[in-house]
Image 1 (tube, one colour):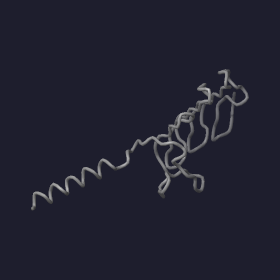
Image 2 (spheres, one colour):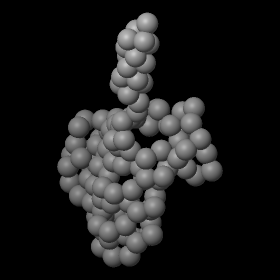
Image 3 (cartoon, one colour):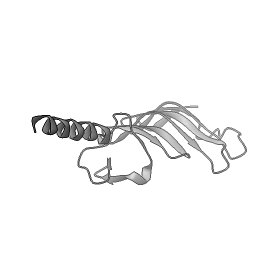
Image 4 (cartoon, helix red, strand yellow):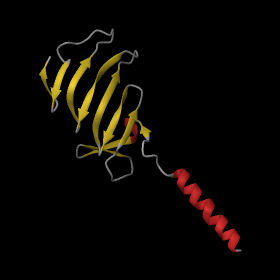
Length: 119
């Protein structure tokens, strides 16, 4: 009887570990909801931290805000934009491309706190 109980507990423990979420879980924007300017995974109350990969947009969220390098693609597969975000705001160099792959100069440039500061 003791051996059966130990086996049952071990099976339960292993199944719980297998079902646990990954720390670097990749999800799409459809899996998230916005509340008070932060993004949450549906049915949770903790701002989401992890990777977003839905094809047209790829990047990371930290505590519910976009953070780090983000890449966006046009529907035709061409690169649309690439740059970094800090605390949800554009930070550093950003390059924007038209659907034919040419650089869009009026929005390409260096950003600080979400505002373009130079070309």
